[in-house]
Length: 290
Length: 280
Image (cartoon, rainbow over all chains, first blue to last red; front, side, top):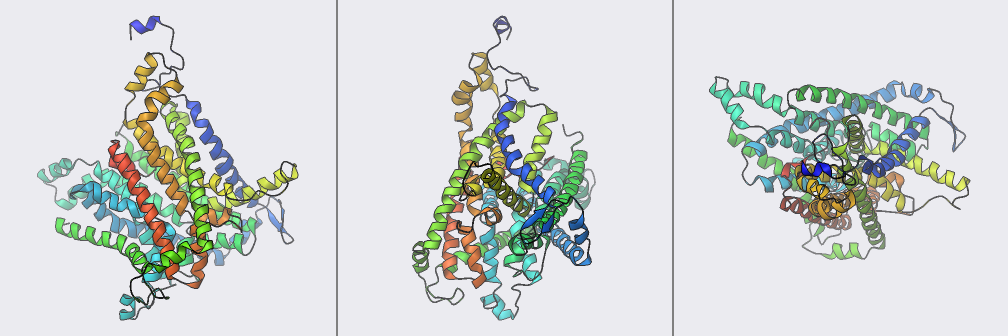
């Protein structure tokens, strides 16, 4: 370093916070341009359309009023929004309840962890559509198990709930595992040596350390569920409407883009609220973590 | 909770995760005309699926779209991943938030946004006389898929880039190589497994995507998931089971290859499993 200081600075040399050379920040520009053009700009279209009105059959009149939102302020739509929140809440709670003990076992007790983790990742990356479709076969009243039980769950709310838990479980497990895997279990043992019972040690040591994973998993399940379309469409037979169903209807059947956009804005608004709240929780958990 | 109980629970979870997938595959080998009436083992539905024009053309579209999307996503995502560590925190944090948003936004919202955007955009181009008729075809799907897949690649590549340390890059700079030469000779060879794995995941995501394709695709352009969905109106069928089993096989191979590549290259399992979330 001392000898090099006499030489002219090498071309392209940069020193970032870490002290090492860095690639220039402008390398982000192509991706940012892509995000702006094909993600943020389209979202701005949604925002603009939500203040527009239909004129005639296909025309759009940018009236810049709140008519669409006022129209949505109705018990009929309120019921659908509440039902959707219920679905998202149930999905989050159920996957957490099933996923936490599982991720805990995977992180603390499992042998051949690499293989077992891969076995969770595989369904995570396999087709969402086919995983929902699979339940169409299982829940069919003529499928052996249900034929014996005389239960017909196909195209019911229960079918939707089952599909949600099934399809979203890996999304909950993976971040939970990522957080639990980092835990130094000797801390838990220390707490128990110092007189904490297993439950108390869990609550005071394990849970706070796992909290980032719980928050992350809940986000990844809850937010996409607020706009879930496919599972109610396939397993619910589109008989019960959720927010996602409602949006899709405005674009495929009703051709009411302004109303559909307003519903999408409601989804975006609730997503923003959840994201901000969670980043607050995460930030609080990070204090002292570096 | 007892360790035994946890192991039992884990076993049940694995059964829950795999039983439905296994059932789809099993019934794809049913020789009968009706899905749930087992009439003996047969591979005839696989050959029927491969001889069905609507399925093979949808399959071809899906493969082309997934490949194009993976190339775009790899370029954009890798460049983004390289640029992030050297950025000021005040710029990096909003970009991270944007990347997270592209991944968690309910897909239906993104789907309709892309639909309206492409309709308006092509109307504008027609109005300005740039093109004669509205935009068509698969490139719209490629463009839309590349949005969230660029983020997927960026996350995978970044985990590897940060994890591998910068001493070799430092040496390269100190010896007078510029950023381009350093990238080609030092960074890229070590980053290649992560780029490949990210690309495979981007390919898989695009290949499996339903919602975005559903809204963005023209009436004439079908992908395999769209083709399967449209036939669900008529209930389950062994033909669709066979198509689904083929998708599953392709995806599982891609994922396992991606995972093994990442592992051999020394990226920790956690990085591969890691899902993008602020504060994690």
